[in-house]
Image (cartoon, rainbow over all chains, first blue to last red):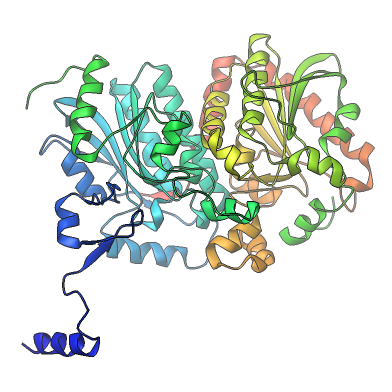
Length: 280
Length: 268
C-alpha cells in the first residue's frame, strides 16, 4: 500500500511521465520495448529485429529437446593465475549474483532428436570473456565430441579475452582452437551460432572455425572494437559496421537465422550431415 | 645476465630506438634468405615477411613480424601490425614448409594485429583463428621467438609452436599495457601500473608454461651488441631445431597440443 503511495508521489514528482512498466531500449533502433513484451519474444526487438542477449539457461531451453540437457563440468570455477587484484572476490560475487559458475555452460543434449554437444556463452558473466574456465570447458566439450563421434553446436557471446587472467587468457585461444581442429580432423561437424556480441579473442579463435557459421540478425561480430577503430581512424564508422549482415556481405557468415527458426535450422543441418535423429 | 629489471623498464627498453629488428637479425642468423611475397588471395602485407633460408646448412622457413628502424620503415611496415593477408601469407609459407619438410621459425614482434576497417572487412578474426588452428597440427617442427613485443592474438597467430623462446627483455601479453589500462580502468595513462601487474616478462612466461626458454641479451639490452644477441639466438636455434626434427612427428604434435592444453588455472 505504501509502495503504491510512493509510486504515485514519484510519478507526480517526475511530472507524471515515468513509465511504470520497465522497458528495454533496443541498442540498434533505440526504441523502447516494454520488458514483458521483449521477454515474451525471447528478447528480439519487435521494431528492428535486433536479436538481444539471452541467458544461457534460456538459450538451452529454446534450443534443445525438452529434458535432454546434461551439463558437463558444471562445478568448474576459475583460479587466479596472475594474482590479479580483486579478481577472486569479483568472481565470488558474480557467481552469486548470476547463478553461473563462469561465462560458458556446456553439455550434451538432443536437438530434434540428434545427440549433440552444446555450449552456450553467457554475456551476463564478465561480458562472456574467455579465461581458464571458458577455455577448458570448450576444449573438453570438443574432446568429448571427438571421442564420442558427436557434432558440436556452440552459441558464442563474448567481449574477448579475460584481461584479469593476462597471458593465460590469450592461451585459451590456442587451447580451444586446437581442440576444434582435432574434432574437425576426426570428421566431426561444428556449427557456430554467433550471438550478440562476438568479438576479440573469441572471434579470433573458435567462433571463426565452424564448418557452418550462423549468425543471429543485427548482432555485433568483430575482432577489434568500434571505439578502438574510430580512435585510430579519427572518424565515425557507418551504423551497420560489424553487424551480422555486414559480416555476411564480407563473406564470414554462412547464414543469418532468426531465433524462432534456429532450432529447426540446427536440426536440419545436423540431419543433412548424416547425424540420425531419434524422435523424442 | 643483467640484474632484473621491472616489466616497465623492459617495455621502455623494447621501445628504445635502435632495438634490433628481424631485418637486422636475418643476415646474421641465416644465409641465403629468399623472401616470398603475398598470400595468393589479396596482397602482400609488409608487416609480415617470410621466406626460405639456410640455418648452417639446414633449410628452414622463416616467418616474422617486421618493425621499422625509423619512421619511414615503420610506415612501410605499418608499425608491425599485420593485416589478415599477412597472417594468410604466414599460413601459406607454413604449409609450404610442411610440404617440403622444413622446420618453421617464427619471430614475433608486434604490438598487435591491425585494428581498422580494412582488417575487419577482410576477416582479421578469421585469419588469426585459422593460423592458430592450422599451426596446431602442422606436420613439421615450429619454433617461435618473441623478439620484443608479443601483443595479443596478433602475436599468437605466429605463436602456436613446439617451443617458445623469449628474448630476455621481450614481453608477451593479452593486450598492450596501454590497452589494458584503457579497458580496465578507462585510463591509458596508467600504463606503467598495468605493465607491472600484468605478468608479461620472459620469466613470467616460463613460470606460466607459455615459454620454455629465455635467450640472454647483452648487458643493457639487445641494441648494445647486435652480433652477440644474434649469436645467442642462432645458438638456441642450432640446439633446438635438430632436437625437434629428431622427434617422431606424431609425438611432437601431441606434445604441441598438450603444451597449450595444460595452460589455465581452475578448480572443480
